[in-house]
Image (cartoon, rainbow, N blue to C red; front, side, top):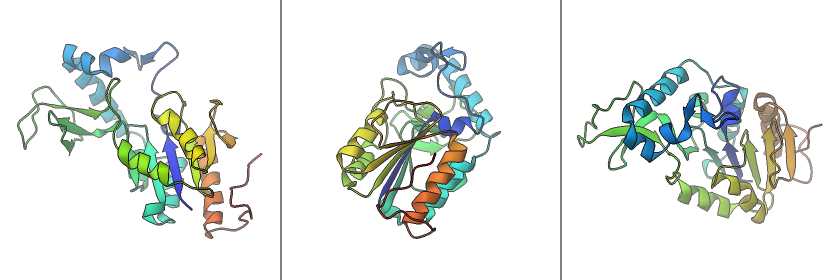
Amino acid sequence: MRIFVLTGAGISAESGIPTFRDAGGLWEGHAVEDVATPEGFARDPDLVYRFYDERRRNLKKVEPNPAHRALARLERAMPPEDFLLVTQNIDNLHDRAGSRRVLHMHGRLDAARNERGEVLPWSGDLRAADRCPRTGTRLRPHVVWFGEIPLHLDEIGRFLASLRPGDLFCAIGTSGVVWPAAGFAAEAGRMGARTVEINREPTGGPFDEVRRGPAGIETPRFVEDCLALLGRGSNAPEDGCPPSRP
């Protein structure tokens, strides 16, 4: 059995990280076009640096929650080639929980990249005067902004294309409106995988099963069901699909 997990802002919100945008379209008080576009960076780089510096500092104050830790446990129970975790989040909570087979398709706060696109770890504040130690070129946050192409799409596409009946796709805490990630569930379903959503609110996505509730509660339950299927637990269902929760 292969398992593809996609996570969004909802899983990290339970650790205290605000979700991406509020009802007014602002990202923590800032217009998205000012802090999350190449044009905004060209117009006011100091604002963009300050914005991500604050996010990076706040990230050090929060911890992975039970949902992050449960997914790391699931990964450890599976052959590396049969599990993939893709996150739309730019935090490092999956990594800190122990996940190793994780792709950050929208980049990450704890890294910077130079003007050639080369990535290097970055834990402190980032300023316009900072330069890549290898190339001497200017650095920017390693975050995929609106209008830019998400990362790791080839690897994600190959794993989706490898799914078959009996495999699982699970989306956790995602809004289902940001592309291309919004199309992953439908693609997994076309390949024959069973699709599961874990979310506080319904998204209306193409899922075979919806588990409504906090990620920190429902994700560990889902992982226990998967471990049962893998022979690492008890009460595995005979049809090869995790049992629904009331």
